[in-house]
Amino acid sequence: MRLTADMIARSPAYINPIKDRELDLRGNKISVIENLAATQNQFDSIDISDNEIRKLECLAVLPRTKMLLLTNNRINRIASDLGRAFPNIETLILTNNHLGTLRDLETLAGMPTLTILSLVDNTVTKQHNYRAFVISRLPNLRVLDFKKIKPNERAAAEAMFGAAKRKPVTTIAASETGAVSTAPAPAPVQPKMGPTPEQIAQIKEAIAGASSLEEVAKLEKALKAGNYDYISQHIAEQKRAAALASTPAPAAAQPPPPAEAPADSALAEAPAEAPADSAPAEPMETEASPAAAAPAPADESAADAMDADAPDAG
Image (spheres, rainbow, N blue to C red):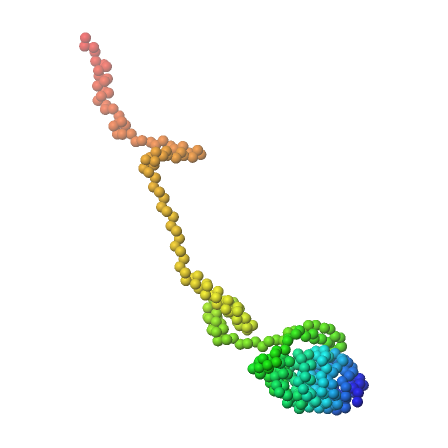
């Protein structure tokens, strides 16, 4: 049976348990995936399980769709451009299909946004190193066949088959009205690694040596952001400042004492002239001696008078 726009319009649509809008196309004996553009990009999840699909492909571009459910089909091929049709796909369930070789899974590398993949009950799962091969091709895959991928398992897989190149992916953002605009996808966020014991010791040392609340706040912000280089630089500056503070300051040079002038030259120097506008110095009054100030004795004056009155003796 063909998947037509009329079938899509008549199929049930609902909000699934994880709060996504889902379109149910189960059990319609669909053999080819077509006409999905009739969904107008209005569904987060599309369930096409229990049909007769042989090739996983799609000509429409559905940026909103994050989950495809294709359990119990006859899929033995995956289109190489499937990542273009579903640029934001995160979950792909292909349980109980007919994928038989690792070569059939090569095209999954074109869907780097995949985080959950199920290939349970496919012949390919019996291939040697099947799990490592799939993990190496999908850098953001977290769960394969309902089993969580551990960091050491990913490291071993990438060592065996090489790490997938993290090329920039072009995602397509679409509104509810179906308008489509292209934009570069953000780079996948790398998990933050915790601080090493040495870095923890440096953090404690930096906080203990902080001299203000503002400095402590900056250190806490750097710690939350994982910026351990800033903390190391801060500790180096603290140590440099402490070393400068502990170094004694050099004693200030004492000026040499002024040279004493020779006695002869001191005597030879003339007294400095008084300024022109200064008042003239008043003459100093000298106190007369008692002998000069006293009046002549009275008897001497009388004797002189008597000599004048006396008659000439002859």
